[in-house]
Image (cartoon, rainbow, N blue to C red; front, top):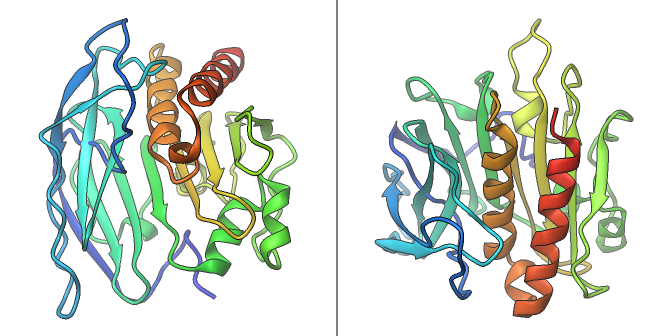
Length: 277
């Protein structure tokens, strides 16, 4: 079994300093409240090996969905994978490490302060935005989602460790009973093993608060996740943008109507605001 947290075979990493967006750019209308069109900062490319499709070109700019506002000091990062391009919101000026698993097509990104890390899955981070765009397979889709979305276990046996009892998990209202999203607040001092932004906090140091979003595009469908460990007074607004942009661009979010997406983003933003400490 291949896990999304921990060491894995066939991993290729590209790293460098960049402000970037990683994930499918959501195709939604612009709204008001800050800049709506944002320049994409490209993450360094990973070497992918022979026999794979070429890396997909990034969009030069993306339009923020209604309900997602980019706060001062945040940026959109873009990562290229074979035949795919992904986008994520994180603090500007951080380092972007692109992770690609050639053996199964898994796609992740780690955005963090300081120099790049040669082995992002084995490194420790006090501050981190980490996203799983493609878990790599049916079982890992189940394991990524099932600690936070119990319905995921209908698609296969849940082999992930139980989530921490201290986690606050909120089922985001998508307006579709077959499309699932859970927002998670991991309290400061709690180490959640199923979220890299919490699990990879330095040993011996109490982790800070982590916000996360886990999505599932139907039973047996694609699972994706993003975690946001950002300190300081602007953490809530940054993590709202990180989680909201990810929701809109996720495989699950792309199935929502404009009205359903707007409703889900309002619900998500309200949860993050209610849990901010």
